[in-house]
Length: 302
Image 1 (tube, helix red, strand yellow):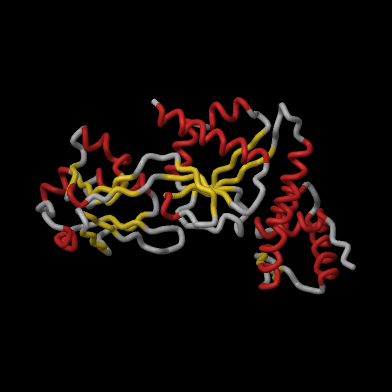
Image 2: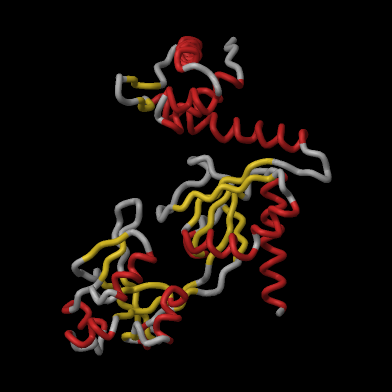
């Protein structure tokens, strides 16, 4: 019978997340040597090597990766249960870790978090901004924020953002040197700004007019992984950007940017907060999702 305790599993998960014994030791408040001894005991009890260690790096073995995927969600559930029992009805506590695109975090920080954190001062919210479509369960997140069409079907989704309209824009300086495109095909002869996801995939431009759609692998002089930098590059006259309209509307109104091919701008469902449907959400997450629902309902009724 294995006698592996929560402290050993916590140590394992912390090292796996930090990829460093020294960093994990600081977080756990123990010495690196004590932490190394704990891991050796765990590996001995499992009769399996969990980490490949050198003087410069720490990496999970294949068995370690499999073990992490099994124990991390289970240990998270145990921690959630402890937090719920430790919290009184009037002072709920706990942490909420959310994988999000920057736009989603910005909306909730402005509109939901001030009142929520004032009401529940013992709840901690962590946003991890990433353009990848991560597996929130496997990666240890409580929830995620993505465009509704990208939310997996086995999730509970709470739509809170307005629909997104994607637009092509360029600066007057750019258009002074390049004839504005009249059709999507003419974009192939322009300097287009490319967007790359954290996963490494390039974002293709999906244009739509009526029932006709067209996907372009737009080429150009720059590739960026941040929408705000795409905006800056367009303002600087470097090329044509393909971005959500909310990001550029004020610059179009001021004349700093100009819409191109407006008839081909598609509208997509807005952002959603989502979490696993087959797991009991901890108290902190339940309160947060309700706060998002309440704000969305209030905004819709105005």
